Image (cartoon, rainbow, N blue to C red; front, side, top):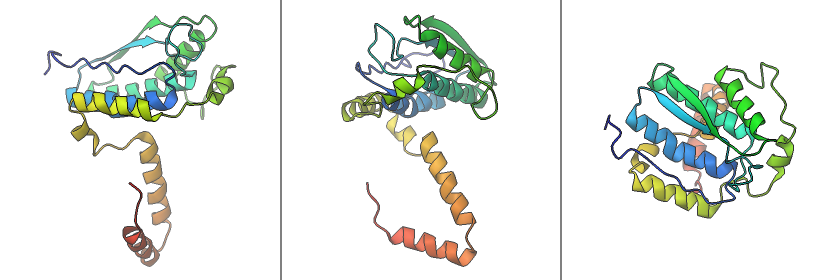
Length: 198
């Protein structure tokens, strides 16, 4: 409902959660919840406690992760609330790493991209990305699915592609469009008869 009653969703990711777990939680819970609620304004409590160098949280996010989530939130604000989004810095206790995470979010808000702009270099990024278990682990995925089910988000999610899936779809479409019509039909026919993993 528009008054926010029963719309708070907590996702208690366990210590050691990295990029994959946070991305799964964002795509499977945050995005569908925003789509369902259709906010007039997005207010982001922009803390960096989940960074890999934070002494309190034991999580493993990088400045690139925070940049990616900020990018996605800005896009959601464009879709739902006429670009009305506010980021408020509220945490992060690594005096060495929090500044790089904050700068990544600021660069995202300003529309700066790695492809088109000179960005502040994160000297710790390669170390953080090298940490093991950055991908979503089975116990983390189960927790995310449980939260999604608890909040009736599963039906909303079935028809929503993740950014990675959208990229794959665009690549496949591009490849199919590069073929002649007869070859395209042959490839589609072969794909339809090929058993797919579930």
